[in-house]
Image (cartoon, rainbow, N blue to C red; front, side, top):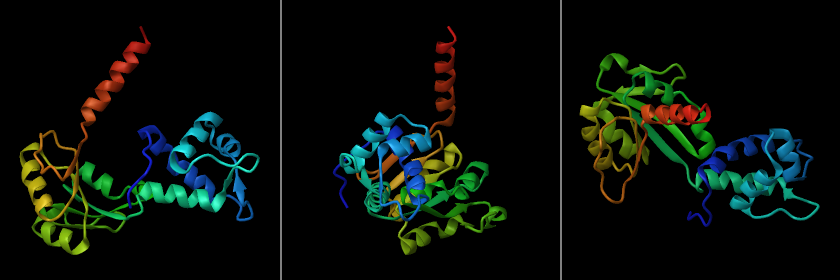
Length: 210
């Protein structure tokens, strides 16, 4: 399903909160206003109106939004109208934490399994998800229709893992290694440098204290 609107990253981060609030409202609440949402969640009313407008347009004067329609609009936007299966390669501390994190579901994604070259790490995660041998990566991805791969392996192994994911049909890669990966033009690549993110926060903090 093609998206007709795009939203800022900050807005995207707030949408799951709006969705959780709306799902927990009284079933008899047929309509909801931006004012009510802003008061409940502690956001500015202008910000809430802007966020919701980017996803589903403006509410109706004196009525606001039809609650069910707003829930559906946010759900559709977060999932893109599709559900994506995700795998992680690298079941160390970072990979394991990502595997058992449930927050991705709010965005229409489900991390279904992790893979590792260390057989000692294979088995079940604390939440019961599969940690499988790296030898099963390509077959699993093809059989399960996996669209997104997360790389959480050392730098020296990252490109090989990336290539295997691409060959298995993965169309987007979230890279936590420090390697500069090469991917085909039709494969999305998002590099996540945790040290750089923390360094940026440190820099911003130092600027506010001058």
